[in-house]
Image (cartoon, rainbow, N blue to C red; front, side, top):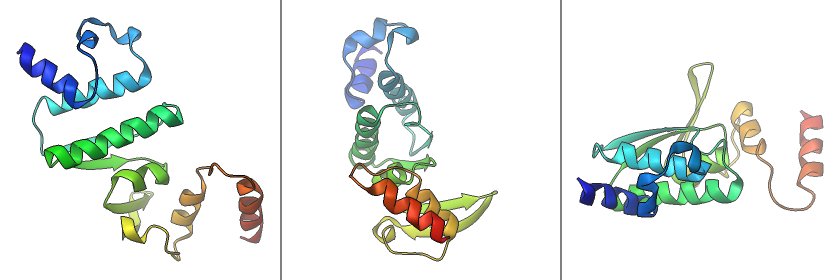
Amino acid sequence: REKRLHRLLELVKLPRSVLWRRPWALSGGQKQRVNLARALAAEPDLILCDEVTSALDSVVAAAVLDLISELRRELGLSVIFISHDMHAVRSVCDEIVVMKNGRIVTQLAQDDYDKPTNELYFERLKRAVPELRRGWLDEHEEILKAE
């Protein structure tokens, strides 16, 4: 059992010392990694990730997204990734499905993400996450005014 626990911690890139720590002594990113390890303990073919990065800062969120992508490759794992953050979705998903009020409004391959669509809700979701470059806010304000 101890070997299995150590292997799971290795998979999610956590030190063995995490085994003896209480939840309140873990950072948000460590908690998400522990949750991934718990899910992986069942050796699933599919895991469901619902807003796994929403409470994390951007650096930690990027590391968790990289880990999920790595686990997908290494373990042949399928992931259903639920998020309002389209940049996060794009980084881990091969296929993107956008839903509004319980209905699919857009479905596309990751490679088609940057291609313009006629679906206003999807386009707004793509623009809802700020880009880290000068002038992005001014550009988006002008787009919204035009709508």
